[in-house]
Image (cartoon, rainbow, N blue to C red; front, side, top):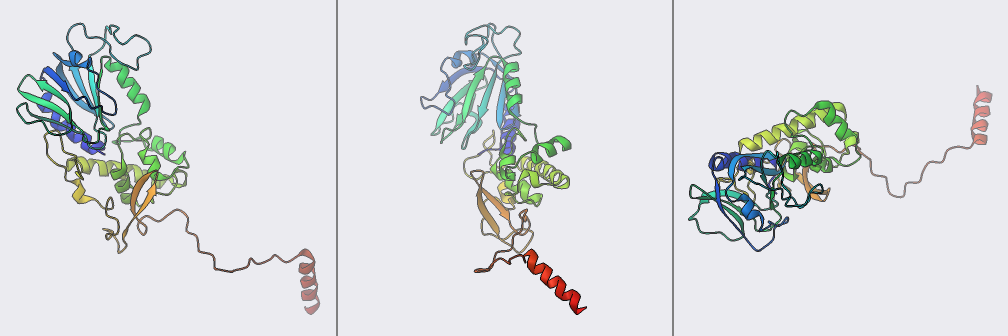
Length: 329
């Protein structure tokens, strides 16, 4: 699944290619994505101009300058019906999620349509912004009220992994008994971290993914916080990780997969010791780690077979021994 570095790469690629361009047409597939595109949104988007492309967590936000008389069209709105006017709105926005296999790219409009193309926005310069998604876990939605959407997303997502507040991060991590893999996958704690970068950050911080958040010391929390930022930053520099389907907004592949320390390397040598990379199922996901470099929190010695527990001497027996020792002295 594309995580923060991949989504950020897509955003950076798309920004110069679509900003300032006007949407002159929309085509959509009859096959539904995870959140289906509504045919009524075609008219809302056609004629709008792209004013920017940005990211929040794993979401892509395409800001639009709508035509006069833009209307509110949010299926989740409770304060007003879907077609109610939205005066004062800063402008509509497209929200896109790449799911597991999504690709959001700009190509010449004359480019033959690939398989699994679900949405195409034709732009006024002869290019198209296309959303392709073989497994259809992605989505694209139109929101007329940008401010309301941003407030909703900020309520559901935690902070970005850059410059995290040390005390707040420490409180969030140590305030739960969940394992660290589950903690890092929780988008309310840090937005944008997924399976790949959780494994890589935990290896970098020398923390076992099965340890609980509550077991971490303040120093370990700081180590993890800095490792998350370092791994994410480096992955962005490498244009993310291409394992199967991922490409950036210009169609180029990522390169961070060539720098994985543990992710997807089960049985291979650890890059920092003589051990081998292990894999364990945690938080419903495959978790990769080095048991030597990332020791578990509790080390238990295995009990010997058929070993009987030692009985504690009775009070009477202790008194007898005491009298005997006194007499001998």
